[in-house]
Image (cartoon, helix red, strand yellow):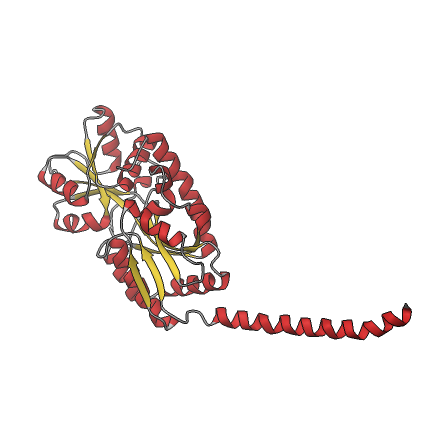
Length: 333
């Protein structure tokens, strides 16, 4: 028996060496395959129509990514159901590093509370890659006779005449901002829902309603011309996009911070080194002065976050948006 063991021992050592060599040979090949990414065009699904803000932003970002990564990026517009159609398509895509999602506060924080069946789970089907930017909303009025020049006066006016001051709300984001503001400021305003910014802007500029909450993109031209008066923005801090306009948080509602945002996500299971590489290149793109300038022109404040930072941010946002939507009974039409 001892003689047999002695005979087999060299054979076992030989087999072990061969197996180890084979395993080591595979690892560099896998690493090289990932480090060579991207080796073909990368698709980014935008869950909104071509020409809308999210689409314009994605095309602007991918112009920089194409330069630094040396590969083309293809924009795949999949509009519908408040962004759910495109987001679901991205969630179900192969996690091979060649499909990503331009996600928003709607697709990745709000929709699971707004829709009975969104078609995907942002928490389990998608993973964070990197933040792109924030989109603060702004409270505006057009009436020269309206006695409000800031948020503190607006709150006082609402309390003096409860539910008589109409506020135009052209989006779900505006509805969430409104609901949170009414709750935190104890300001009994009256919501008037619209289907688009065009409709609410027409009515506020025409004097049919005294107030509107909308994106800086939609309001900025009218603010610059003097037709609208900005009362306060909804981000925690002041924004370069509206110099001189104080945030709501500094006008009697401490800590108020409800903004829209855009970020990049990947199907769950995408190789970590690909996610890390794309995230790093995104952060580099957001530091480019021309990219930052053009982003702010379209109403997006550049905001760089790594994948782990974005993941933590989105988890907090999902809790915040979910609580407001459920408490206010907001539902998607």
